[in-house]
Image 1 (cartoon, rainbow, N blue to C red):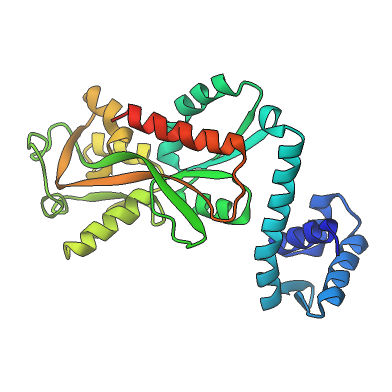
Image 2 (image 1 turned 120 degrees about the vertical axis):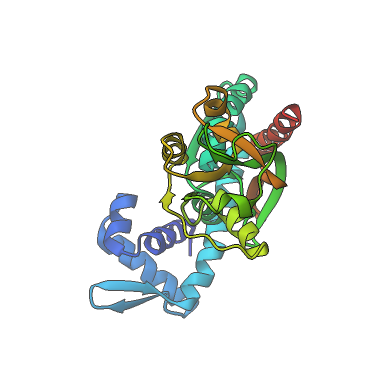
Length: 294
């Protein structure tokens, strides 16, 4: 059993197909099939059930996949370290949409001044997708607005942000010093989609206050919600950093919630991840950046 066998297994597991894994690895399909068969013979357990033209991972495969990811990750990290790859290599960052839009560009720009030869690759998606990327090893470090759900992930806050009521400028509540959720939900309500960090926090607060709301709109785009608020379609609750510019330009009104609704912006990484010097440097840089914003 070799590292090659493990890499092939991981590809087959992730693609759910011998053919797709062979294409991704630029290998002949029989070579991939043989490698999987050799792994099954070596451990004496089936890793995939073959049903018709499809394959399905067994319980043993699920268990093996978790170990395989970390074996590959540790090997790659060793290669980077021994070859001084930290200075001239790459760092993979996953970021939630709000952080990726309003924080990460300036943060990466400043970080690159200290690591000019480092290639920083970024994926921006919702917090749930970034957590998955950390778990499957496709991202080294994540920056998200929510608490990670998996116990395999380490979470460290580096900044805070507040959620604000977002209103048309001429709305009856726009002149208030603060508004409550119970006041807000009396109006047509616009919300982010299920799975977004802001939606999770808002749903939790609504449930705690025993408030029920049927959103008029649900959108993956905060900018679409802001535009709809500007046009008088309804009201919303969004992170202040997302609406600050539109508020200053007079397109919308942003009013603090009562009680105040704050949330942590978090650095996440897998608990078994070997943190190379450039990863540690990026984590410390994020913390320092967050302190500067207070």
